[in-house]
Length: 383
Image 1 (cartoon, rainbow, N blue to C red):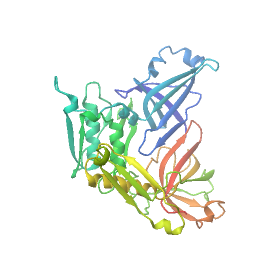
Image 2 (cartoon, rainbow, N blue to C red):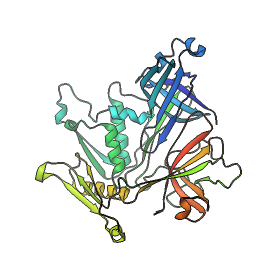
Image 3 (cartoon, rainbow, N blue to C red):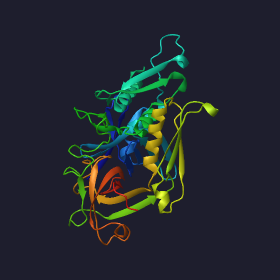
Image 4 (tube, helix red, strand yellow):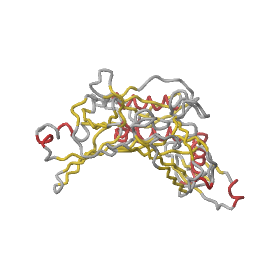
């Protein structure tokens, strides 16, 4: 499917112009900002005739977006320019809208003369509600408005307090909410505005009952709504199925620290020694959560860290055509997919029988060509 690159004004989302690019590699990730890197030939006649083009690509004020037809694959603020005088090319680098919140501090609207160090904000609701409230707060400051549709709260009993003296960044606080046990996935999904003259970003989150983001009709169990990549089909467009296994962060004991210093430091530990009996050595991990002051909350962080580190991180990478079913633009990071593993796969056949296996899309990347790389996390243990 043909892809195009456009730019626009970040604070309004309004499109400014389509870009004549030489290349535009991009990536989309789960619970992280994606990337766009557009390279433009400045001595191209189409560029030289548009004197206003560089103003439309102003870092921080403008955004880049990659579209496949009417589907916006990724979009967000431009952060840097890099000009190569020998090649006469300008490379413009942007990140997903979520990157803005690594530049926003969690701070209440201050009254005149109010000491920010003595302030605090307490939010109650589901973890997703607290994430939405953090984003609403960031958007409510003078100059903080962005074309983000935050959505409605679901209600809940979780509580978080953010002190002004911590100067915590909204982006980090969102990652902490996702990282806690049963924390929700959080995404800022771009789409064309209703009048098709710009882009808006919809804040999508998991819920208390279903914290994972995925396509409608699917669930944590096998479902008919799962995307299917089957390399037995004559026109599947699948080119390869690569495998990566990384034990660099593997751990069976997880330590977490919270507020305090010295002997007063709040600490929690979670462990699972089952694999020790199978010849694995003891491996440990640590994580710091300086804002946590409640023991049971810190226990949730330690347990969540342990669960995510107990196995080697395994990723399957699928190379597929963008114009074959399912086409680029139909699937998102977090969606469920069924992948056919053939019996002649030199690596996976050592662990698995020829069959469909359920995976989750953790990211995908491409450029302006007909191929896309889809990164998948298999749900079963393939040790």
